[in-house]
Image 1 (cartoon, rainbow, N blue to C red):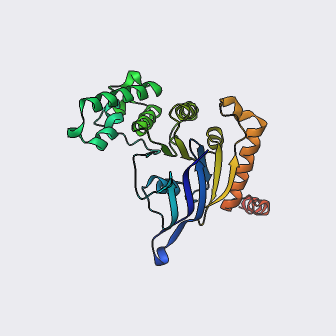
Image 2 (image 1 turned 180 degrees about the vertical axis):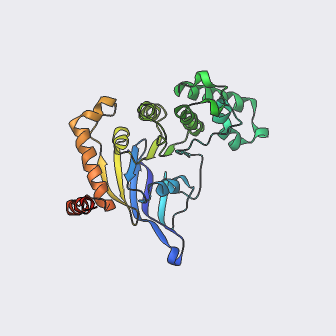
Image 3 (image 1 turned 135 degrees about the vertical axis):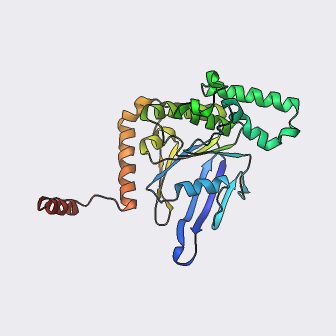
Length: 279
């Protein structure tokens, strides 16, 4: 598959002098067109910063990010981002929230009748895809967390982005709702065919969703290991219990502990037990 996103020796530094923090260093990765890539790693490894750089919401200090061979110099209609916090407009209904990006793009006054008709058709299709037909005229505060995130995803898809960036989008949801959302986003990926980059702390989530899992290490943030997921394209929840899935999950978790310096030291635990027993 042709390369959609090319990340070339990207570095990112925040602050100066004694406050200088190197968030990313020499990060290089190619993501293919229509590929689903997840990013995992310990807190502070720069996953979200890298995603924001791809989205044009953060500027890199060094290196280059290309989408379709063109340098990323800011946000663009070819990319859309979904965050953990839904950020829906409380004064707009579900349908109005979904259409809002269209209004921003064209401006209220410049929308023609054909534009309005096309936007309505697209919004209706996304509502159906997300299972939100019954909530068209509902307000955000009338929706559950999972439903609000469905609206946020539909809004991101409204402009048919070629690249969909998702930063911990299901982190605030309960376990059962997360599973439903996993299958939904896989269905969306199959139908809409965006190139998808997804940041998560949940290794099981990362494996279940992705073609490849990219493990990042901290201090400074860098790519440590890239894992090819040994699962068929059509995913089912039962696959999470297969030996291949569990072995990869164990391997990734162990590597995260190693790269973050959190590997269990048995001597330290034994000493802690002794110290605690003497209290």
